[in-house]
Image (cartoon, rainbow, N blue to C red; front, side, top):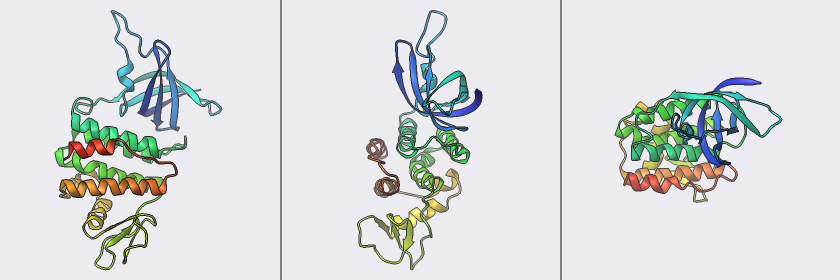
Length: 245
């Protein structure tokens, strides 16, 4: 059966001489894998359509979907949102690749979650048009709120009597826990501010230096590792730290 759905490209590999296999986070079906026949084929009159399937691309698609099959087919596709900067700006592209790698490590089940799809879609659109401060704070805000969407939000908020975040338990506490997975004082306070920021515009008003941003990015990766089985390491974290240094 053919369905219309939006999709965000997560990963693409070559298949045969002219085709590709692409992993897509879809609005209707969650994570799905598709064969796109002839996407890499070009001629004097037509260009290759492989550019549609770059990681982070947002597409409108018509897809064949059979729940009994692990691999589906895309019938038609076109841009849903055409980026002006992400594919051409080094900093924005690095942040986009962080977002995509984080999703690759976090999204395990092929289940529909429209609210999460719209959150990711909005994140990438804001990244394309936002200012420098928004771009710098976006990875932190996105990581925390992705955790919330996946069901392990950090509970509570920063107060004079709750100055520590227990990353393992996922809440603000009074005292430093017996294990090493925690944030305290300034980093806990900033995390509280990021959690309470309703959108990227609000998150962009939080002033951070590069050392704090580095500490938080590493801590949030640990937070995801603690709550998602088999999460692993994110290669893009090091790239972001270099770019924002």
